[in-house]
Image 1: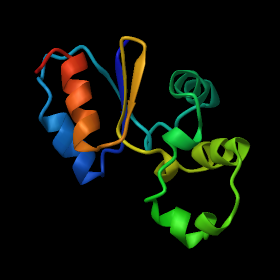
Image 2: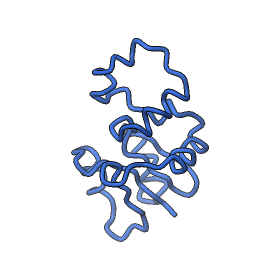
Image 3: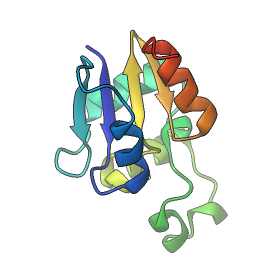
Length: 118
């Protein structure tokens, strides 16, 4: 099943979702209302190859906790991802067994190609 992990209160996520066709067969997972589980995170890890790839260094908590000045390990990234939804780089699309992480223009173009929209 194709899926998007997103944050409903995120303007960028809402804009990206709004641009998608309404009839798309996509499961929507709001990570604030329904926190990501360890097994879901493991699945994303298997596809992405690292927890750091899934981790948002733009998160306010990243700066607040001064994490940029710490040597974080993969286990640290995993712990933080499970602790608070804001650490997940969003949106995360899982499409046909591939993972697309983040909201860069290049990544969203890849998502649109994978969905056959371009």
